[in-house]
Image (cartoon, rainbow, N blue to C red; front, top):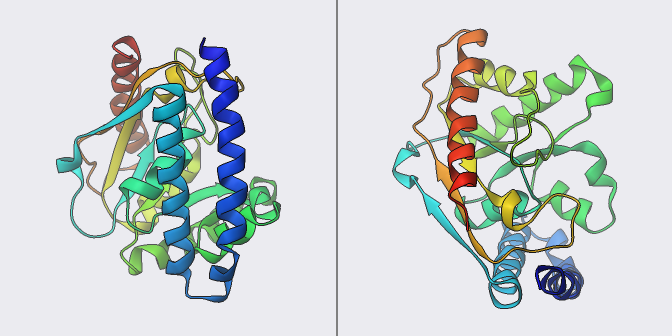
Length: 237
């Protein structure tokens, strides 16, 4: 049944994505917030399809842990769902993303116009400098900056290292980091068409204040995200 639900959702997802992407093309000639609005509408539509077709809902916990002002959100990454939800729960997010995604027709145009933060890992240290400059501009505009510190989707129950980009942003921006745990990989597994009915939980954890050295910060970040994500996975659905 989860396979059938997944196939039906995938068809509806692509139809909805094509419709909204084509309908919103004029926003590329407007101020960025017009495109941001379209991204939000698209994400809301995807969540409706997930609920109606796949039986997947979501719950957001710990909003009280988000401090006022610019903030760096460091989120666990298990599923494509993670890249969509922040268009709904964060206002005008600046999401750190792979630079190659900007090359995708239409989708990449929207990401560029809405001032996402690309990172090209092939350029080494230059990629970090470019990312930091873009993140500083986002912080100045009081936009929440979202980064997936492991740099890729990591299935529940598996591990991957935390990459240096998050430490560079923490050091250079001097703003609080809010760790985020989630269990989206249970309902929407990586590289699978199956969709498991239930409730995805995303939890904002207590913020990490600026000022720690790199080693202590990275240890504290991982110690916050990993056990919380394991807990959410064990109690999922």
